[in-house]
Amino acid sequence: MIRINENYLKLRPSYLFSEISRRVAAFQEAHPGKDIIRLGIGDVTRALPKACIDAFHLAVDEMASDSTFKGYGPEQGYAFLREKIARYDYRSRGAEIHADEIFVSDGAKSDTANIQEIFSGDILIAIPDPVYPVYLDTNVMAGRSGDLGDGRYKNIIYLDSTAENGFVPGLPKEKADLIYLCFPNNPTGAVIPKDMLKQWVDYARHNKALILYDAAYEAFIKDGSLPRSIYELEGAREVAIEFRSFSKTAGFTGTRCAYTVVPKSCMAYDSAGGTHSLHSFWNRRQATKFNGVSYPVQKAAEAVYSDEGRAQVKELIGYYMNNASLIRARMQPLGYTCTGGENSPYIWVKTLMDSWDFFDMLLNKAGVVCTPGSGFGRCGQGYIRISAFNSHENVERAIDRIEQVLK
Image (cartoon, rainbow, N blue to C red; front, top):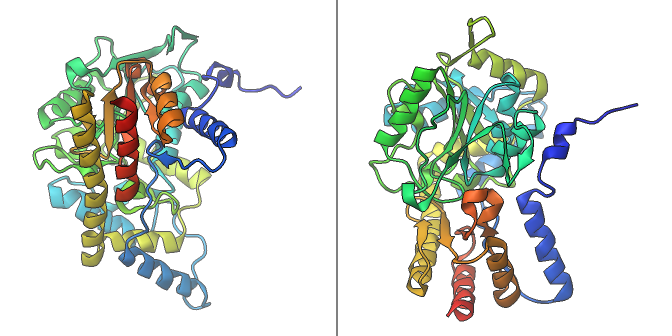
């Protein structure tokens, strides 16, 4: 008799974005031909930068010739891309990260989901609330969560992120082993100042804990005083793994390319207290389970760092941030408090009613899709997330419709 992993039975009945898709599909079936504007899931809508497309084409042409064809590449990523990442994303900002500490992958979602495999099943996990569901669900699947009760798992340390603390959680009273942080934050759009991030680094060093730092939206930071990487903080190399993505930065959501940084000085411990390199563990995991990102995709990602690529990516980010500014500027006069949208492509809106009820109202009356905050955790109840990832025209039409419903 084949048995299942019963931890899957502890998961909430539906993944947040699957439930959104189900409700939208039901609405479309009931109202065929009704125009829907999607400002929910954070998928980009504009084409890849021209520099990336040109590099993509050249790489595909290489695959058409025996003399330049590429088969299996290195599981960690090609050196040409890893070296550009280290130079432009880290050393240019004073963060001493080396190319061989970077692992190219098919997405930050995959990496943040898979990284927990290299840790013991009985460690204590600290997760912000509200939170990107993948952090929590993968630890539930792995058996670390305990049972679900009153909307929360009993073995998880929840870090409440509320309006009172600016959606930047404080240090836990308990001793956490593994800590998930995401800034600019998904879903709230909040950002963390250097002095507050330094407190987390100090906490991890003092408690021999590890921070998993999701910086997938760092390119949207406008404020130069804010950290773009946790490695800008002294001591972070020893206690942090960082995740980044080309998905939102350069429109690679359908192309799939991201990377994870695991410094060689980042250690964890066995049951006897012995130290082990997390870099070597992650390298072993990737070499066993992953065959690497395709050569044409990595060449396209490398083009992000060319002069043309950087200019085009800057324009792309500016386009979406103009959308974010428009959403904030139109929602606030309606009496809705907004967070994010200034250094992040997400706007976190206080709804004054149940999150799913507000979602249904906008879908049914305005034909606009947002994301209900309660789907991200208990502290998200009473909020929605609006994404700036759409065309200017669609964002303007969506806000016009929302105004008509809410006034």
